Image (cartoon, rainbow, N blue to C red; front, side, top):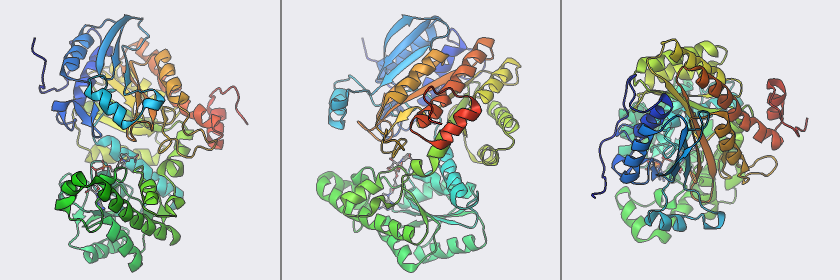
Length: 553
Ligand code: NAD
């Protein structure tokens, strides 16, 4: 028998289904949507995003998952082990229709070389966060997360808006390219250093970046004028951040916020000063050790300058790319003088159970998302930053694959949105059901000492019981599919995280499940932070009735 090979994949649209129920039709459409060429980076290799994050292990697994989801009954559950369907069990109608475990390895074996060895034997795959759990929605996800982070910076330091402030950053790649738009959506001015002119141009073409300057003098002129006039603007300058950032410090340019999203987590993906762009890949491939030393030296100079801006009074933070750790390895003594973005801005939101809530319209009709946008604005009229995001996203975000939306909602809010969507399906206001899920990067669903759980108040950064409890409580509460992954955005051995997706099909049963899942899932964030001793989480638990048996206060 010939093995199945790559074929174009696109989720079905409309209100007619081929699977037995909307619960399984939803899983099927989202699985296929992850591999839509508009959504996936390398669909032929089943890679959705984030290096090698896959939706299925191989094409034979893809075809088998498709077949099983089409045939699955409401009293059965499909088990997926690292992208391969391994069993169908008899369960019940409240049970998830799919249970997924991706990339998990026993602690001592959880290294890249061992993972690669097992992967090459065809025994596992890398699931990233939302690739192998079938709820990736394209770059809107990173744009919203970046918008939310800059909104939190604005709240903390600048009275709620970045208007009249200048943010200096570097890296305009897949994720970093969201920074200029996220800053201007918060009404600020952004100066972005990027070494590759093609990357900068691509951001202009996709309207994430406003302008590319002629040179550094020109860039400084443009951003200083915009800052003075309190006019949102984003400008890229082509250059090496290890040279440009120290030069801006020397010139005394007044900068309010400094961060970085070059690919610093991988020294071979950060261009050292003095190396030409065209020599990069050859040099890194031929002399990886020498290249690593040079790139760490450059990162040390880059981060020294970031610390200089910190001393001058700027708000400075590491944006999840490990530049502090690499710079320290390159000899920068003060690399950890500035914080990572989660402890600095995101954790207070996590204490309220707030995190990246997302949904997709299975109809494929953008009008359904427009209707849900209006519902969100109606439900939470007092939340100005949410309203600004929803309005701007409606205007500026192009859909990839099935129309979808993301916004951050907290404990006590998510289930209200879910129940409203379910009612809209029941009333025929939406033309087909909606799936409601989230990123694994959420308040109570991840253990990741270099990112989401860096510097927890009680030192519990590496305790991974929380994401496992999160997956179990979502399974017990009626989620439609639940996943447990290892690795995600920070790599092997560095994180464990869980996800859930729940279908709003308009039935009373779906309403009961949604009410429980979308209360308990963010509830995990509240109890995780109460347990670690965060005062804000204690207040939220007391105010909103989250039961925590051993609450301190
Ligand atoms: P990417 O590889 O697509 O882009 C990196 C960009 O940096 C490239 O355009 C490259 O040309 C540029 N660059 C490299 N060296 C440079 C230098 N010396 N000076 C100026 N520009 C330079 O990576 P990405 O997907 O944009 O991710 C960027 C980083 O952010 C990664 O380290 C990633 O792990 C991290 N990340 C963090 C979060 C988060 O939690 N906030 C989320 C996603 C990604």
